[in-house]
Length: 297
Image 1: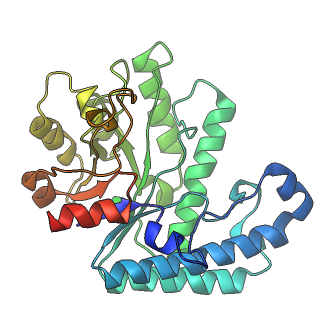
Image 2 (image 1 turned 30 degrees about the vertical axis):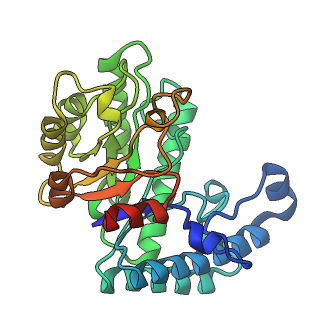
Image 3 (image 1 turned 180 degrees about the vertical axis):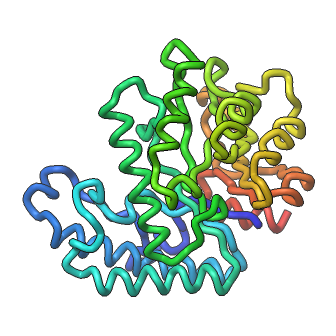
């Protein structure tokens, strides 16, 4: 399967835009509280259902949902929302559609979500974020499996990779079963950070967290492995579940001034072997339009 992330530009550009990322600032949360969070959540889930139906009608079976699906969920339990019954019903309809159509839904919490941080407060907030993402998947009735993954980066070494890996493993062990079984970890895009090979040995083999192979990031952290070798290292960590791969091309190919890590708006060359062996998330600014170009090329 091929997929795209978060924003559907076709639906977003309508006169009545469809989007799942309605959010609010702290000041609004403090003044409007649960009733407004509840209404935004209801609208987000209703629009998620619309996006999933659009995906079904266009034969898109892989989708990464935004992490602002439930605004300020760190401050409350889902059952506290005034419109919880309606929200639960919408979530279950989303889950039923995903299952009946053989779709795959994943999440990728924001970059601040660092389970291996040397700040206890950051780790606690990160664990909390993973847990509420797992709650959303539970509300949809989806399996507790990396098939419906919550993907994170380690994102730093804090001057000591071994100690950082220890903290990450400890944080993983502290997760609830539903969160832990869905967690995946992705190779980084900085040469001094984490490679696929390092994740496989320090994380996946030790606590059973599958490694997501990011094709573009592998350019920065290949550690001598070819793309195929890096993918095979990651694929072996998935234990019977079809692997997820992220694929993008550098914006610098068309814009020499762009950062090396920046993603292009479209991609031109998705290797056949990658498509055959994994479900591939196309990470490109063109979103579903980039995916359509890949499929028609």
